[in-house]
Length: 386
Image (tube, rainbow, N blue to C red; front, side, top):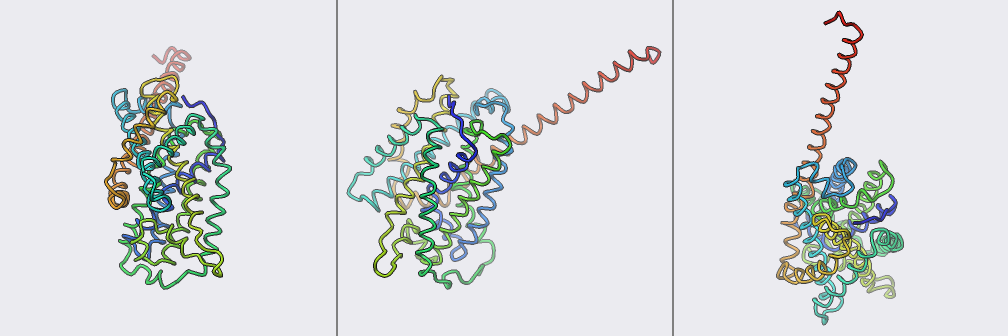
């Protein structure tokens, strides 16, 4: 099993990388479909709701009765239901990994290397993910510490260079059609990435810091959410809602608008590199969680025995998971959030309710035991009371 330990700072960085992941390219268009020019407002509300989800996950994570998530499911839900939930949890991590591999393949094959077969991109990328997973959680977290400053630097540079292109008219009128479209626009952001953060419950016992893990989790969510808000705002302000929706990768199209003195331009490759890094960490976390889950369900001594066959299985599914990019984007924007709400929201709520019920039952039993002891002591102290 995973024996590595990571510091709370490293956990925060992994959360930031995970949140940016696929969101930096997909989310602006998914939000703008519903909220149009108010997409930036939907992003703000969505991030606040996402932080509430992180708070829920922390409440569950700190009360897990076992360092192995599968064992915690069994202890809380019973052997059979817990095993079934564990299998479904592993399948969720597996399919999320499949989608990440397909996303990177579609992007690279359409925007960067159009003459390269997408299957070749899938294979190369999954080999990198397998290698990172085999090195373990500690190595992954330490490498993320190296790359995060570069990701933040690019977002800052992008924001500065895009400033001359901002057009306030693209943000008007504000809340023209009421709050309903704005609230609908938060749904894609909840599904990608905040509801997906439930996978971090598998890694939670490996984080040092005790009670401070919740703060690290929340800080990571806030930083990642802030970056999404900035990217969404700039995309709407520069491209406008119509072009944002029409572009498959609107933030990538945003970088093409940068033109400083006919000298600094065509820097979209920097965004591609940034996205490649962040989605690599998100994919590796999903893959690592699925491998750990399989090992725990099958009671294997090491998860490393399953990473290679699991990787090849993911490559096969990545080629058939959806027929084309348009269908994939529609699935991500319309269907993924209702699906992800089951493992990402319903499951933590159920676990939290079971944990609260167990505490209540223990409290009653403790009270009865204490009451019985007091009564026995009184009886021994005053035999005539009988």
